Length: 114
Length: 113
Image (cartoon, rainbow over all chains, first blue to last red; front, side, top):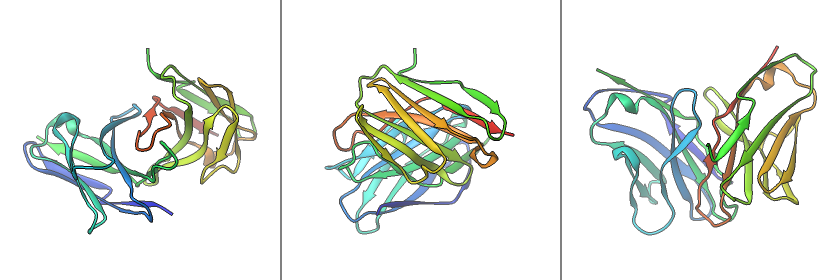
């Protein structure tokens, strides 16, 4: 079975500061990993994904994530936070055999202070 | 127009009523999903369909049913709504290839009173 744990339900940073949202996964097969963002009253938008190949993945809006198999982690980072980054972020895992069937973490709400 | 459209966007219904949430997509994807979002719990899979004749239960299917009327349409029904089904419901679609991820609709906020 697969699972995802996001460490910290709420993260608050100052504008311009580093954003780090933590995600650890459990999977018995090579995982496919995803980060989604949800702005208020909207659906989920794909930020980035890891399938195979390069372990450092770049996404939209300046975000990136690094797949670390030894640590079973896929943390999301952004060097400099912007007010518009305030949203809820979800990490998800898929085993690939089931196509887009995703298992989600609990979500992390990011607040950005001026 | 949105690629994945959910109707209605908001709905208040009474306990015991039957309600249907509808989803249609223009992405041409074979696979469709219904998720439920609750604060602090993330998104949980209710049902998924890999094609019109292939429908599968997710982790929280009790109290729900689905119908895949066509490749582009996937509806979710609550046969007898109860208050703990109050939640935000999302429809999603994906390609069949591994690692394709999913595309989400805007969500339906359902309140059962």
